[in-house]
Image 1 (tube, rainbow, N blue to C red):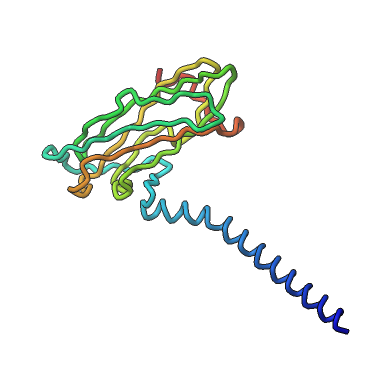
Image 2: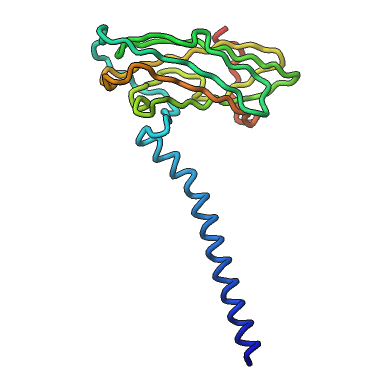
Length: 188
C-alpha cells in the first residue's frame, strides 16, 4: 500500500514539474515578441521603426547641431562588409539629411542580408525618423558585388537639449533567400 502511494506521489510530482517546465518555456518564448513590441512602442533599447516615417514640416533649428555617428557590424554567417561612407555627420534638428552606405559581398556566392538598426542613447530613438532606409527590406548581392544605398532621415526638432550625439548602429545578418527584394544596383 505504501509503495502504491509513494508511486502516485512521485507521479504527481513529475507531472507537476513537467507542467511548470512547459509553462516556463512557453512564457520565455512569449517574451521575445512582447519585448520587441514594448521596445518599439517606448523607444527603449534603441529600437527604431521598421518602415518609413512621416517627417515634420516644421522649422529647422539652425541654432543646434547634433552629431550622428554611423556604426556598422556584420554578424557571423555573412561574408559581407557594410560601411558608412561618412561615419560621422553633423545635422540640424528638423532638417532632412542623407547618409550613404556601401555593401560589399566578399564571398564566392550570392547571399542575402538584412540590416537591423539601433540608436543610443535610447531616449533619442523616438526622435530619429527614417524616411528611406535599406533596413526596411532584405538585400541580395552576387559574389563580389558592391552596392551603395542611402539612409534618408530627420532628427525631430523636439530632441531633448541634453542629447548632443546620437549613435546609429546597423548590425547586418544573413537572411532567407526567398524573402529577398533584390535591388540590383538601383543606387549605384
